[in-house]
Length: 169
Image 1: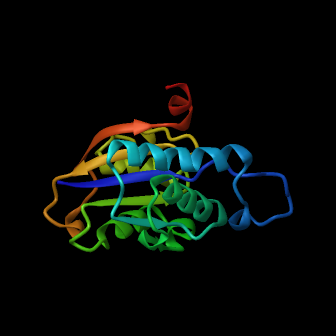
Image 2: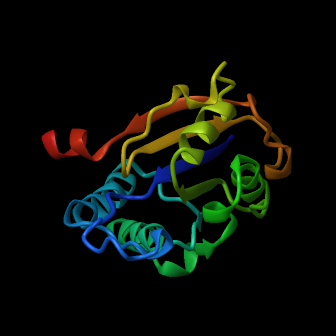
């Protein structure tokens, strides 16, 4: 069984109102939450074989800090600008593009596309039924024989974790 992890970028900073949305960095809270989610993945044995991440600054930082928390090499990250500029379909295409030796892929992106993708993968009536605050992590299982066969509605939600819960346990 293959697994898909969906990680919404961590909390971004609004300290520089003139900064282009694409270039916004993480806020202090985001700088703490991103590695926290990586540590959670390491402790639960759910480290991805491949991370496909948006090229926007806050998603880059989230990916890199999560990898630090996992104690993994940044070489597992692949950058995909379609995860910022594209649509939900581009999120599915990113998942479908994973090599067959990959058992667990993680997508790092943005709302509302992250929530919509999570909902559509599990066959929700309304794709946005899954609510993902910043740095939320969703794990879905697919029974597709290969990544290129992953389709909307063909997955099952296994769990969801948010940084706020991890701070309290």
